[in-house]
Length: 437
Image 1 (cartoon, rainbow, N blue to C red):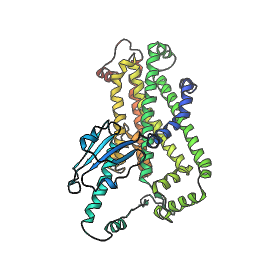
Image 2 (image 1 turned 60 degrees about the horizontal axis):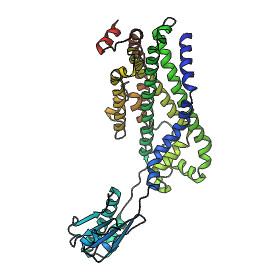
Image 3 (image 1 turned 120 degrees about the horizontal axis):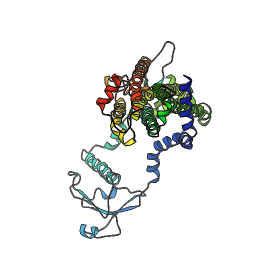
Image 4 (image 1 turned 90 degrees about the horizontal axis):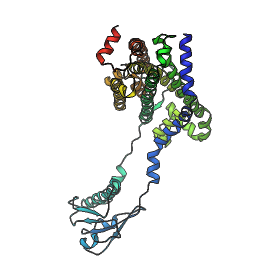
């Protein structure tokens, strides 16, 4: 164990002391926040140029009611369609037929440059609303539009889980929207960590094997101990990174966020979580309330990071053993591409299964995907935010860590033969023979 500890320390120090590790650890949370906020920022700041349309309305119904904004201007002119299309100082021409109310397809849009989906959708939606109003007038019912507006209802559901209540524990409101977003982030984190750090183990083995360093090392340490030390060393780097993020996130949620939130907001969140009032009565979006409740609850965040750490370590040990075996069997990164394909396919499949979890977290597909060790780390982390029973999480962890022991044994059989093989890329049949030896 002393020899393994030396190898772990060397692998850990070599990576943690790099500037790239420090920069990634600091910037990754900011990058993830930026990626989530990017679509909103793009919508806010990516404003296009003002586009002017000449409207030729033969029905006389649509044009007076079209409303423009900072990006679109509607102008009516007394000219023919050919004359309007010949104008070069406008963006386009909107021609509307006389029978537009009865025939909504009697409209054409001519543009002098490429259009966009949002622009065409804006014009079409306005025309649809105006046509619907004109059709309603035919029923000759007084205040029909107001009647229709009055009967519209906006239902807001506040969801409570009956199956997770414990003795003496108050029910808590849940949000599928927040669970979806959190599950997506956690699943993507596991997916990236398994690929990035698993490939790191394989690359390290290939580099040392190519420089004949392994030939010297195995004279002092057993090949299995060397493989185990490398895997645990890189795993400790991943755990350190997650631990730093956990401290930052939980520290901010405990110390900073409550002071930034208005006191009445925190009281409202507590009341909705306890079931005293609903989010509709509070006048606040249910997803927003659930997000605030999660962000300001250090206990729930700590538990989330504990599960993340356990599945990260288990999944990494499971896959990195295979990556190490592949690295020991080849002499270059190019040779490793073919052999690592069977390893990366289950990881990609796990991400695809995680997407299906969001539609039904309790389906048979989601359950077995979170139990089978090849997909369980990613799929289970996508399911946990939806509040699944604890016994399923424990079962998944037990199966995963038992599988880790079996995979380490198999990978070790390949590793001890592969580190001495040079100049030839083994076939899958030869790898099976090494395992049987």
